[in-house]
Amino acid sequence: MSAPARPLASAALFDTAIGVCAIAWSATGVLRFALPDRDATATRTHILRRHRLVDIHEADPSPEITTAITRIQAHLTGDLDDLRWIPVDLSPLNDFDRAVYEITRAIDPGHTLNYGAIANRIGHPGGAQAVGQSLGRNPIPLIIPCHRVLAADHALHGFSAPGGLTTKQHLLEIERTPGFGEPTLF
Figure 1 (cartoon, rainbow, N blue to C red):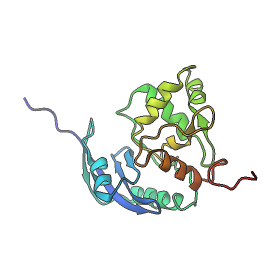
Figure 2 (figure 1 turned 180 degrees about the vertical axis):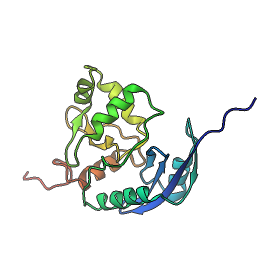
Figure 3 (figure 1 turned 90 degrees about the vertical axis):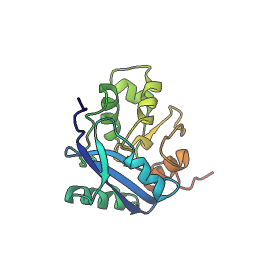
Figure 4 (figure 1 turned 90 degrees about the horizontal axis):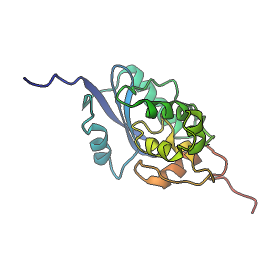
């Protein structure tokens, strides 16, 4: 007996001010997002890699995804948008990750939280490391803005997207986050 057919999801690459990004979506919402990798081929490979529950193939964006792409492009040029209106499909994820991502998604551009604060808000005091691990698995960076989560000392630690901490810092600079990119008095 063969395994049941896996539903299809779609994906598309698109240019932004920081490089080629990619987005994958299901009928429910965005499943995966890829920040620029070393080249467009690597970004394509990342977005199309096998997903646990669906098969992803390249397609033309739906009107809703086209609108999301347009707003993401604008956001990455500094026309900030919280991107919370973009539907996401978190159905493949566990309850802990969904709770972490819900709090993370509520952080406005230009603001940050630390890992411990998120752990406290989801009822897991002392769970900062688990929050960090969850954010390291975030399949939808930027839309679920894990780059806005910092260490307790406001330092940059860990960012699993291509470019690592350099990308994280650049996103915080684009969003005009205090302490990142603006000149200081001393």
